[in-house]
Image (cartoon, rainbow over all chains, first blue to last red; front, side, top):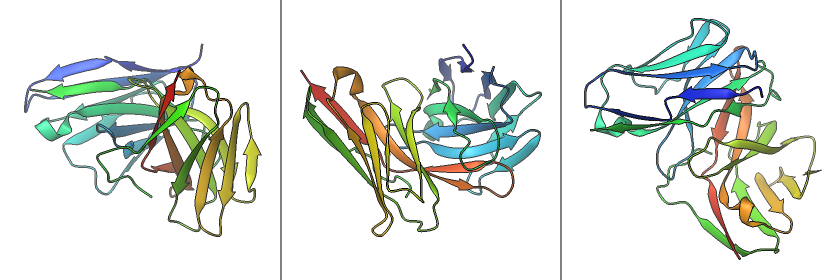
Length: 114
Length: 115
């Protein structure tokens, strides 16, 4: 089945140790998004790629970076994780930029920072 | 609007009863709304959407109502089942420059279905 895949599902890292989360999609969608979701809160958009064009949210900390080497893959890099970065990280894709292009979410990666 | 709370409101409903989940939005220019269901440990799953030129849309066991006058959205689930237990988010989808669309999520409501 076409889908959005996130690896790993659970990631534990140490305070300050760089970590990379990955997302892949078999939908051949043009747009890929990264969200952060903390406990009992709604997902919050960090940034997204439309093809190779990177779009950062104004309030996304510089500690968070992203790479999209090809259509199928997108990575979230956290350069120096702090305790406050512990959260669920969700990847989503949409076919295009149109308003009615539904975003499809992956299962998420739960990040723990020790 | 965006969620800022730490505690999700909870709706407890008896299996077989109807559920109504409410959501208020802030941007009167919003044109497109979506309801997502998020089960524990999973990503949000699309349920149903509605454009601002409509006031009602029905799916399988779900109905979304939109009242633009008071900027209110609701999701009705008919004959609620144990599998409906989840957190439900409304979201506004707005164009983001020319490079995608931007979902802004509401606060979420936890639905607990009692057998």
